[in-house]
Length: 235
Image 1 (cartoon, rainbow, N blue to C red):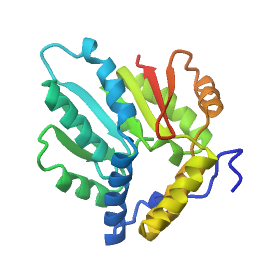
Image 2: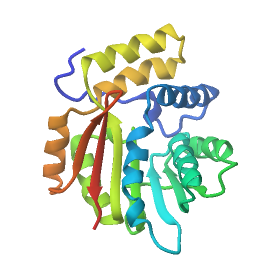
Image 3: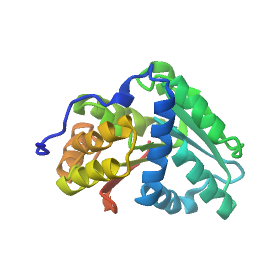
Image 4: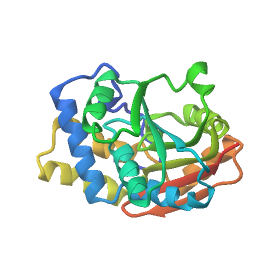
């Protein structure tokens, strides 16, 4: 596999009409993989940095873009509950099946709601939040699409944009490729998990994309296991 540049092959999960029991299994598998590999730490660590800036007298309004199965939102809700920090969490996704799945899994978290939306639409762009998060979402877009989204997200977020995505690296690619086979993962996870890494980013990619978006102030950190944490101040 040539990992010198980002792959452009679509993932099976990019099909917005996908609504099968196989997709449900895939979402369960992704939550397990993220839990094993510390996939929630980049977002939770960035949220922890925000504690001195938490709004007084109200809940912090946060939207998770491409929320999928809602697992990142549930981890954020649990994190905030332990610290008695008020959060109003909204999961944004275009796939109705995923939204229904996520809502059912999040029934014990009244601070989480879900909304179907096109993130490229003017109606969504007009919505303001304190924080926008995007976990394992950015690699689904082309460079040009992502540059436009980064500009828009910075304008939508009053405090910060928090991005958690994969590091395109041979060790990450082949590890997840053979791990999902060894564990007899679903067809979806065996196809999409290594492809997600191939579609992901190097440090140079992030620096170039942020520069093209006109974003000069940001934090870019590598996190185990093969994740990038990008924190962009809002406007």
